[in-house]
Image 1 (cartoon, one colour):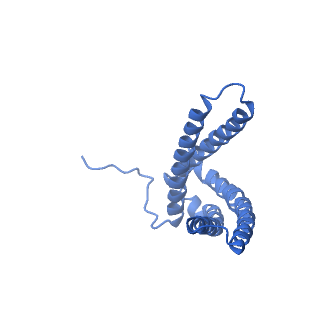
Image 2 (cartoon, one colour; image 1 turned 30 degrees about the vertical axis):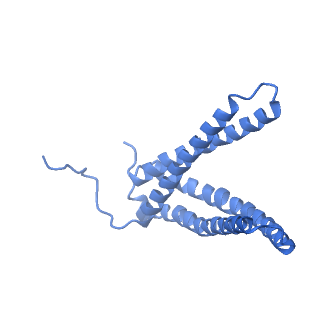
Image 3 (cartoon, one colour; image 1 turned 120 degrees about the vertical axis):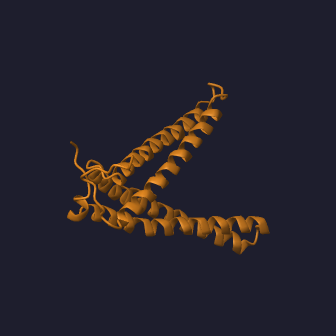
Length: 183
């Protein structure tokens, strides 16, 4: 039996917004995995602690709450991206909003905080290098951390315009027409 296609489906050609939606979906799914694994590790550390250790328990509960919150947000983002890739009508405005929120929250605010940390870190590295108190392995570790900061800032620097472009692109009438409304 041949494959049946919906009568309302049509070929819209290359859609670069779908590639970005796939990338967001994959990164959000990876985030779900990372937050779930970290929450599991926190739970294992939390279980054997005595009740008298209230300070550590409180800190671990806060970390666990953040992991659960980030896991839920990542899972919602996976669902929104999947709906957009399948061109569901409800997913287009949701992905537009999520793109803007990610650009502002993750990109700009997170990037600014990361940049400020990087500046402080660079000053500390320069101070310790001036004192020449680190061995070679420590210097290599510090250089690796410095590169990691630069890469993270660079990813945010590239990610913000891409997310804003996605939000703008999803608002275009030609893209809006590609989405199916609910029946």
